[in-house]
Image (cartoon, rainbow, N blue to C red; front, side, top):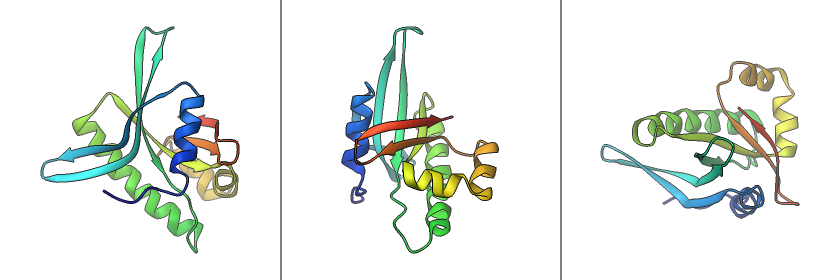
Length: 138
C-alpha cells in the first residue's frame, strides 16, 4: 500500500465536513492479479434522489519540481484508476483532489483550461488550511 499524500487527512476532513461518509481509507481496486489503491472512497446519501452517490478520491499534492510533470503523472494515474473503477466498481465516480492554489495556478493556464473543456477529469478543489471543499468540477 502506498504512503499517504501529505494532504490526505485534510481532504478526508473536508469530505466529512461536506457530509460524505468515508467508506474506504485507501480503496483497493483489484483488476485481475493487480491491486491499485485510490486514496479514499466515500458515499453520500442524496435524499432528493433517494439514492447513494459513491466516489473515489485520488489526492495529489503537486509539490514536485515541475507542475506539468506532476500533472502528467496525476493525469496518467487518473486515467488508469478511472478505467479500473469502470471494471470493478462502475457505480463509483473518480475525482482528483487538488489544493485551491494549484487549481488556480494550473487550471487557469491554457493547458489546464483545455483539459477542463475536454472533460478529461473530475476535480475536487480543497483548502488545506480550512480543511473544506471549495469546488467540485464534473
